[in-house]
Length: 167
Image (cartoon, rainbow, N blue to C red; front, top):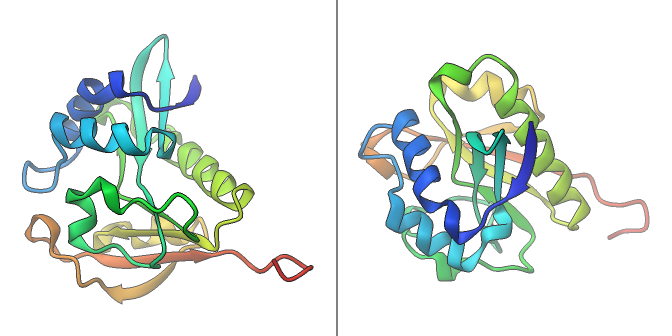
């Protein structure tokens, strides 16, 4: 299994897996992925086996340490030099779950964000997934202002400790 970054050609496969993982009100569609991939393809981590997409993580970089609903709709809000890696979605094909694929991707996203000098990683999740994300060091900051898909979301933040030289 290989992890690679996204390309515009991945929009259809991403939309397919997304639709398997999220209710329609929460799922991004092919047009959403096309728009995002046109602006920030290097913030899509895809895990594949023999060319088949099994799982992915996607998001953008922001100057704010929280996810607001407008960010899902407006790829131009991506701030390449921003301090926060945002995660919009973690999706694994249903038949591939419980194999550590999402965890492998999350560790890669966290490592990449740290290497890029970000302050941390931010995501929102449903209440049942809080312990999963806490196992990676994310802190539950409470109920999010996001109402994406008409669901209650929780703000989860993983802050990196400052570098010894103050960076």
